[in-house]
Image (cartoon, rainbow, N blue to C red; front, side):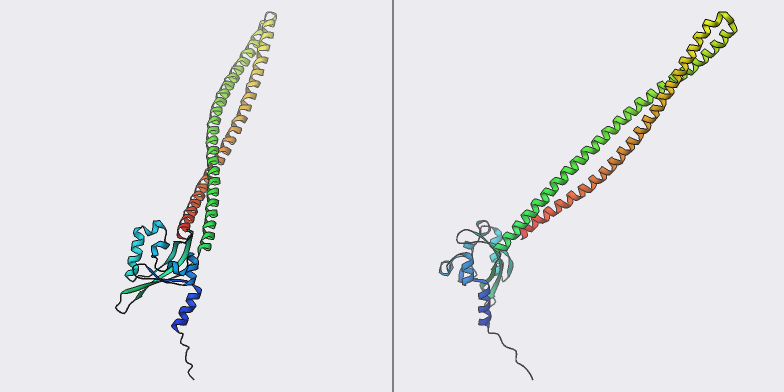
Amino acid sequence: MTVDQPVLDQKQMFNAMEQSFAMITFDPQGNISWINHNFSQVMGYKIEEIQGMHHRQLCSSEFRNSQEYMDFWKDLRNGKAFHDKVKRISKDGQVLWLEAFYTPVFASDGQVQAVVKIATDITDRQAVLQKSIAEFTALVEEMTASTNTVHDASETIVNDMEALNKESEIVNNYVAKIQSVASFVKDIATQSNLIGLNASIEASRAGEHGRSFAVVANEVRKMAEKSKDSATDISDQLKEILHSLSVMVEMMKNVSRKIENNSVSINELKKTYEQIAQIADELSTVM
């Protein structure tokens, strides 16, 4: 058995749409010919006030005086439909945002005889979106500022490390010079010890006459030994200092390399924040 599908009456469909949406019709020149109750409420006008007005009177001054506005109506008169979020101005001057569909209506000869607009008020939703985008943008800017601070601090540390490394090299050179002097003193002490030893031998050969000279020679040998020991001790300490400096310089180089690597990561993070901020800015324009 065949069941006939219910045929919806066009008037019933129109009434259903009129109850749910803000609707308005224009002639091809943009004059308002009809408006429903929902649209009059959204715009803040009485129905009798708005009938006969021109579309431009509902728009912002910058839009109605622009080439974009002229092209907008030219496209509609040429039969091109339009759908987008639009900015409109209410009777009391408040900014409204509408999700709007403009559809040309064609006569039997194919010419546009009217334009029907169906709209939904999205002003509250737009305000929430704008607020969220503004808060998000502020957060990104704060994160970017913090990243810049960390980046600047890292650069300062790297510069300080490089300066400290140069100072360490200077100290290293001074230590090397002192070590050279200590080595020279050690050589003199060794030679003095040999001279004292030879003098003692000669004094012993001289017998009684060389006794006093032997005492002096012995003291020279003792002083030479002490000088040699002191020079050796200084040399050993300098070696320890050089080793510590070498370890410290290597540690500074490692720290500098890590900070430089972090700086690269921070720069990449900064670029990401800037891209996010750009996207948020684009969203604020689109939304």
